[in-house]
Image (cartoon, rainbow, N blue to C red):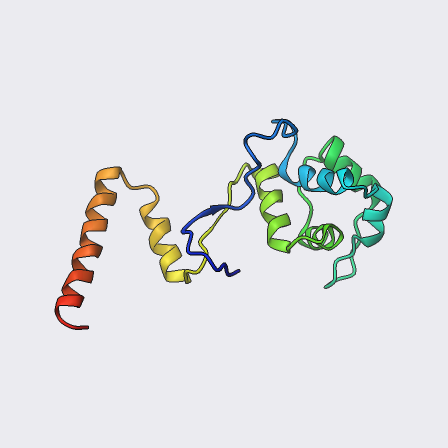
Length: 152
């Protein structure tokens, strides 16, 4: 996924903290489905369009209702997530992130515009103390200065 801006990290599934409609009990995937309902969709129409484009697997009206009202213990499968993404008109990654947040309490972040090497380095630095992070920053900046001075 690419973005035109250069934000290093962007909360992928964070709800609007000022929204009065967000309730702690509602999960992220439940909220995505509820947003479609709030815009005039019905469970029936959503279920009619909930078809995984890769496998043809569908998601039923009762399943969508359960996700919103009384989420099942297990998260949807990958084909079910693709079907839900299709019916909501959302990218698969958005539904996958919402599913991870709701069932695993995992807050996904996106590193826009960076390759896998940068992501690995940032993941490695994530657990460092502020002093260790400063030390790494100074090393990187010193290397950049040395390259500039060497004319590279």
